[in-house]
Length: 273
Image (cartoon, rainbow, N blue to C red):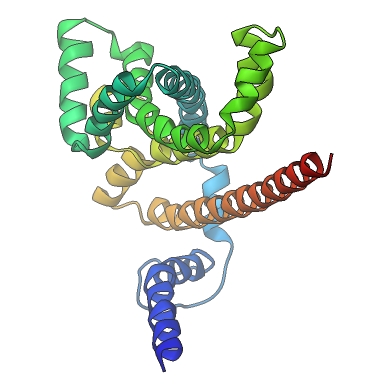
């Protein structure tokens, strides 16, 4: 009875989570202008998505910003996590606590703060995209840090010490010993940073140039207007984003499982030797 109830509850939770997305995906393949009635299936929304110049520019700009800011955030977050991990218990505790603040803090507070500091105090020109890039890095780097730290705690630290004893420099030991062990966490942090960039609205809206739009700001502006064709094309865009995210998660899970199996095999081989 407990198994039946637990499986039923799990099924209901999955239904609540994924049914709305499934309905959205169905409507993206229709010619319906409003939610409520399906008149016929069509690829018109996807055609509009990939043929409208402003939609194309928005997608390219959003991806460029997401990948660029995620790369910078991954480098900074990974180096910060490694540095803090080897700095001792006090530094680890202090920086870990400080890193929690921007994660828990309301995003609108971060957006206002960045706008005042970068544009009002430092005089950064919004048309240069520097303020927008800095804002996204500030948002994403703490999450990358949180993705890498658990992998550092799980790794076999004796391998790093053995590499130093065998004559490797700290830089070489980090590159050849530590980094391969924390690589799954780095990839997870990068993927999370890309997702945060794609989803962000407040920081983007307060730091972006007036003529630049990301998916989030474009969606908000489009839903306020009366352009039905653009609104329905955004259904198609949302479906594509969901499919890409699902594929990314599947690839990461498969890769992580393979790495875990390879690690267990290598450990078993070392024990036999």
